[in-house]
Length: 311
Image 1 (cartoon, rainbow, N blue to C red):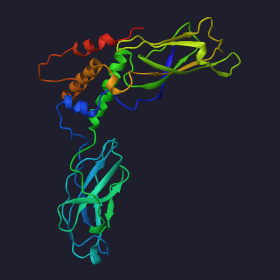
Image 2 (image 1 turned 45 degrees about the vertical axis):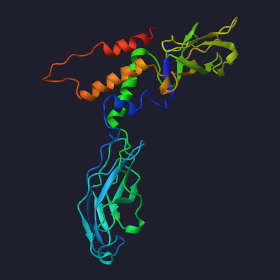
Image 3 (image 1 turned 180 degrees about the vertical axis):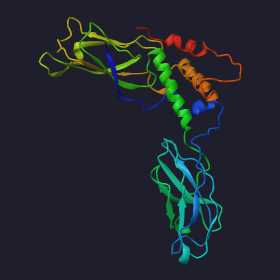
Image 4 (image 1 turned 135 degrees about the vertical axis):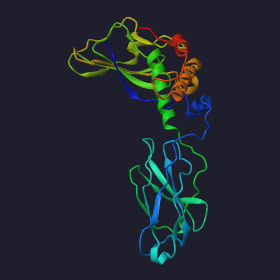
């Protein structure tokens, strides 16, 4: 029996977060929750560079997708004289979820109302920072829109992708896989449809050496179309598979599978994914207590059955 291992993961998903938000009728700005308030207080006696006057602070979270809008605002901290107490200690700086890679700190100028970039904390672990920056050295204004992706929606999108691919035995967007076999079968059936291409076939010969088959020694059949059958490989006309050593994973077939870009994934598969994400969004637990519901039990399978691959 063959064993599959992932070589190169997809770079795009069948649906975008924007498409998921549109299906759920969510505002496009919904994303990573904004941070709670920072605790700010004078750092103690000593000269510093914070401009004299009243200041307030806030933080944002940064993920691979973008940055949140302004978090909750701290209490006012007043620097009476920078030569006497010109530093501000920030503590309890909020930590973000698993998707957060950085936090950004913003501050008003003395007696101002616009929040300008004070510093970037290039991790999601530190909870303290000492402000010793003059007003003139502050940076850009805090974002007005949340450009991060909602971490729950991201997780549900990935789970929905796994569901439809497991149910149908198909690959949606493109990935590269290794099929590992203990010997050459008569015909090598590649278990993920649609087959895009075969990268290589390597095997361990009877002497224990690794060999690579020339592409001219075998024939690749890659059916096309949204409901196509799995691809397969057979020896070229009048040729035979070579003899392999009797060891596990003696034959490794590297192949690329998937419909291609997200736009190429069949609409029915995408619709099934939207149904799944919508159900998980509306019901946060496995059991709903105190309501009468009717499951659309055939909605998702009816969309996916035409694409199901039967071995």
